[in-house]
Length: 143
Image (tube, rainbow, N blue to C red; front, side, top):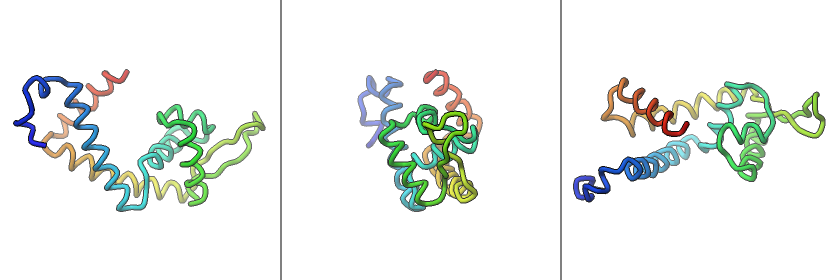
């Protein structure tokens, strides 16, 4: 898409710019994850477990904004790959606690490296300060 050929009224709308940037980011993330045989949802789940520790499937999904039907599929894949483990929650036997394994930590690092390249590719025209500022502004919008 040639941005200079896009009508000014569109280019002046942050919502339009965010939408177009999100499409481009989604494509780049998909391509990067494919190179390491991964998924963006895998990264999100592993990152949540790394930061917050063992938790329920429902809570991890809420933290990552992942639908429960997708969470079930992603956790099944991650469990089969040995990146997470499920065990009964000692405080509530009706639910399982999902835990990050040592293999999962290594996998998280590999996925994180692939996503770091995406950040660099997508935001290459911005300085590190501008990237931090953009992240701060987008966080405020989402809050």
